[in-house]
Image 1 (cartoon, one colour):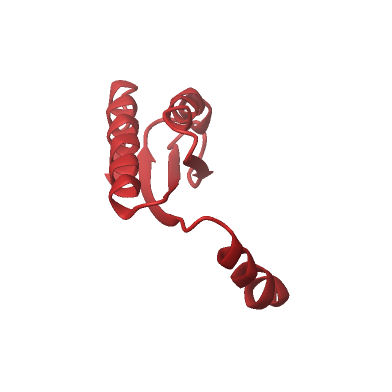
Image 2 (tube, rainbow, N blue to C red; image 1 turned 60 degrees about the vertical axis):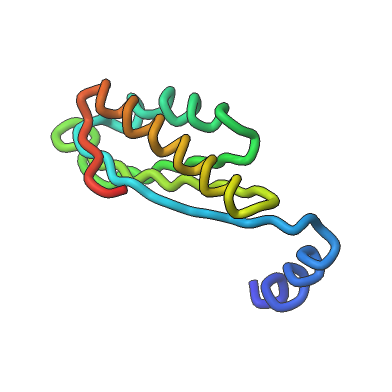
Length: 105
Protein backbone atom coordinates (compact mmCIF):
# COMPACT_ATOMS: atom_id res chain seq x y z
CA UNK A 1 0.00 0.00 0.00
CA UNK A 2 2.83 2.43 0.83
CA UNK A 3 4.30 2.06 -2.67
CA UNK A 4 0.99 3.03 -4.24
CA UNK A 5 0.38 5.99 -1.92
CA UNK A 6 3.96 7.27 -2.00
CA UNK A 7 4.85 6.71 -5.65
CA UNK A 8 2.06 5.57 -7.96
CA UNK A 9 -0.74 7.83 -6.76
CA UNK A 10 1.31 11.07 -7.01
CA UNK A 11 2.39 10.12 -10.55
CA UNK A 12 -1.20 9.41 -11.59
CA UNK A 13 -2.30 12.76 -10.16
CA UNK A 14 0.43 14.50 -12.21
CA UNK A 15 -0.65 13.02 -15.54
CA UNK A 16 -4.38 12.60 -14.98
CA UNK A 17 -7.17 15.16 -14.90
CA UNK A 18 -7.37 17.38 -11.83
CA UNK A 19 -10.36 16.07 -9.90
CA UNK A 20 -12.02 17.13 -6.68
CA UNK A 21 -13.50 14.41 -4.47
CA UNK A 22 -16.27 14.77 -1.92
CA UNK A 23 -17.48 12.02 0.40
CA UNK A 24 -20.51 12.15 2.66
CA UNK A 25 -22.37 9.52 4.60
CA UNK A 26 -25.81 9.03 6.06
CA UNK A 27 -27.13 6.40 8.43
CA UNK A 28 -30.50 4.86 7.69
CA UNK A 29 -32.72 3.24 10.30
CA UNK A 30 -35.71 1.03 9.58
CA UNK A 31 -35.04 -0.06 5.99
CA UNK A 32 -33.15 -3.29 5.24
CA UNK A 33 -30.17 -3.08 2.90
CA UNK A 34 -31.98 -5.23 0.33
CA UNK A 35 -34.78 -2.65 0.13
CA UNK A 36 -32.25 0.16 -0.21
CA UNK A 37 -30.51 -1.50 -3.18
CA UNK A 38 -32.88 -0.15 -5.89
CA UNK A 39 -32.73 3.34 -4.36
CA UNK A 40 -28.92 3.23 -4.31
CA UNK A 41 -28.87 1.98 -7.89
CA UNK A 42 -31.08 4.89 -9.03
CA UNK A 43 -28.82 7.30 -7.14
CA UNK A 44 -25.73 5.98 -8.89
CA UNK A 45 -27.43 6.40 -12.27
CA UNK A 46 -27.92 10.12 -11.60
CA UNK A 47 -24.34 10.75 -12.80
CA UNK A 48 -21.35 8.77 -13.96
CA UNK A 49 -19.31 10.61 -11.30
CA UNK A 50 -21.24 9.15 -8.35
CA UNK A 51 -20.39 6.01 -6.40
CA UNK A 52 -22.54 4.81 -3.51
CA UNK A 53 -21.65 2.04 -1.06
CA UNK A 54 -23.84 0.64 1.69
CA UNK A 55 -22.63 -0.92 4.94
CA UNK A 56 -25.20 -2.84 7.03
CA UNK A 57 -24.72 -2.27 10.76
CA UNK A 58 -27.83 -3.58 12.49
CA UNK A 59 -29.92 -6.75 12.31
CA UNK A 60 -31.43 -7.13 8.81
CA UNK A 61 -34.95 -7.91 10.06
CA UNK A 62 -35.31 -6.82 13.68
CA UNK A 63 -33.64 -3.41 13.55
CA UNK A 64 -32.06 -2.59 10.21
CA UNK A 65 -29.36 0.06 10.36
CA UNK A 66 -27.35 0.87 7.22
CA UNK A 67 -24.58 3.36 6.68
CA UNK A 68 -24.47 4.76 3.15
CA UNK A 69 -21.33 6.40 1.78
CA UNK A 70 -21.64 8.67 -1.24
CA UNK A 71 -18.57 9.62 -3.28
CA UNK A 72 -18.53 12.21 -6.08
CA UNK A 73 -15.71 13.49 -8.27
CA UNK A 74 -15.61 16.41 -10.69
CA UNK A 75 -13.19 18.87 -12.25
CA UNK A 76 -14.42 21.74 -10.07
CA UNK A 77 -15.47 22.05 -6.44
CA UNK A 78 -18.86 23.66 -7.13
CA UNK A 79 -19.97 20.86 -9.47
CA UNK A 80 -18.81 18.26 -6.97
CA UNK A 81 -20.79 19.86 -4.13
CA UNK A 82 -23.88 20.27 -6.34
CA UNK A 83 -23.76 16.63 -7.42
CA UNK A 84 -23.39 15.25 -3.91
CA UNK A 85 -26.17 17.46 -2.54
CA UNK A 86 -28.47 16.40 -5.37
CA UNK A 87 -27.91 12.68 -4.78
CA UNK A 88 -28.17 13.03 -0.97
CA UNK A 89 -31.49 14.86 -1.35
CA UNK A 90 -32.74 12.10 -3.63
CA UNK A 91 -31.59 9.34 -1.26
CA UNK A 92 -33.11 11.03 1.80
CA UNK A 93 -36.45 11.53 0.05
CA UNK A 94 -36.60 7.98 -1.33
CA UNK A 95 -35.63 6.48 2.04
CA UNK A 96 -38.37 8.43 3.82
CA UNK A 97 -40.88 7.21 1.22
CA UNK A 98 -39.88 3.64 2.20
CA UNK A 99 -40.61 4.47 5.83
CA UNK A 100 -36.98 4.85 6.84
CA UNK A 101 -35.36 7.44 9.03
CA UNK A 102 -32.15 9.25 8.11
CA UNK A 103 -30.19 9.61 11.35
CA UNK A 104 -27.17 11.53 10.10
CA UNK A 105 -26.45 13.51 7.04
